[in-house]
Image 1 (spheres, rainbow, N blue to C red):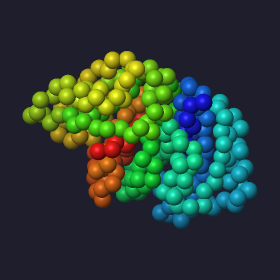
Image 2: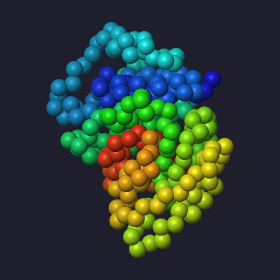
Image 3: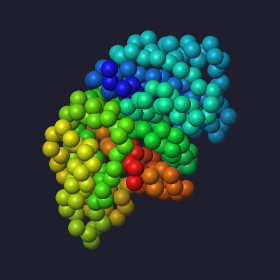
Image 4: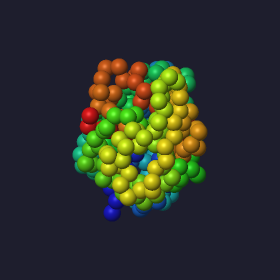
Length: 273
């Protein structure tokens, strides 16, 4: 059986939307789900700043989880965590070895940047596992993704051996792949070095030949999002380098800015370098 998807559930509309997306994606290869309930104040929740979060009893949590799994198209197990988000997710990853962790992202235009970036940072630090961020507005109707765009620079990267589940998913989907390279207006915009770096990583083994696409832009985050729109991507892949998610300025990194302002599902693949 394929490795499960670990879905964070806090019963908000964003989390429910991510669950529907994850279930549809898991159904494409028959992967099971593990729903992990995390207290809402631990996730991307603007209400954490207003004091309007409604705390649920254990019985209410169990009923809410049962309601959400009743009609899922794949098998699902449920868990409820009492630890903080990092400890809870780390424990679940160790026990279930998921192919990816799935997180819903609400409309963050009115949410402090630091809340968005710090939550993603915590998950990347805790799991070192592929992280799928599903923004509000993404629907299961776009599953399976047919056009996947991978943003890459010209630097080589090394992916973890635990990405076997990601290989299985991509090989099952057999999507149209585009390697996106963003260059400054005055620089060479050839995609060849970026394509070579991605191919050398082994990520594309067994997949259709990837196409290259270049964008000239002064700011990398905007260039990546422009490239995703140019290629009509259903899903955007980003390589999350250790210096990004272990550094103290993650909220200023390219990865964090793309997550903050992106409006399509974004899959973060943690690299060793």
